[in-house]
Length: 223
Ligand SMILES: C[S@@+](CC[C@H](N)C(=O)[O-])C[C@H]1O[C@@H](n2cnc3c(N)ncnc32)[C@H](O)[C@@H]1O
Image 1 (cartoon, rainbow, N blue to C red):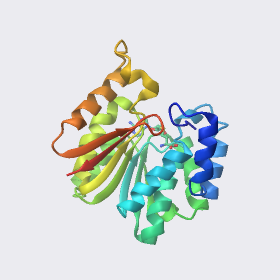
Image 2: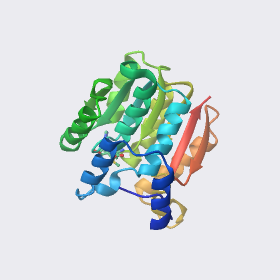
Image 3: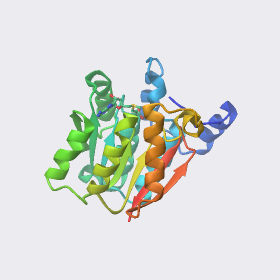
């Protein structure tokens, strides 16, 4: 699990106390994922709670996620959509890793939201292209992007096509542990994140705002 940039352990504990109680299956997913070597990839509980607030605010019924891992963020999104729409909600979950997503599926089943989640194991740009070809453009309310950083622009463009006007997309890791502010860092991931942030800022198709939640969360609202 990553915690929000710059937060002391005391503030992380405070946020846990004042935020809504974490769903028991989310808590187990977080605790068990801590034992994995890639645990840092998981979003923090406060980020999950914030995303659930946005999903509820826009009453999202249909969503996509790029980057499932062991399922924490997808479960948070699915629970928030299920709260409002029950079995009529749908989450398209995109990943390429069979082992991690097998674990995710156990948590979705335990939380009884597996019926609203469609897991697709394939490069996410291909999965989103297929949904565009299937005429699903403009049908999605919410999207969360948390996978390969050099793919973010492809997900941004495809996600914009799938979102309805007023729909919201969130991009994780946009501050990349602070690397984006290091002018000497020209690694492909850092450059991809910087380029997307500037593109979204001046893109007339969206309103975008960068926040320091987690490792940097960019919120994009489709006009
Ligand atoms: C940072 S983790 C996602 C963490 C997850 N959102 C959570 O909160 O636990 C990134 C995930 O993206 C997946 N991924 C990487 N490249 C991908 C691609 N081209 N298409 C789909 N998924 C990809 C990885 O397999 C990994 O599970």
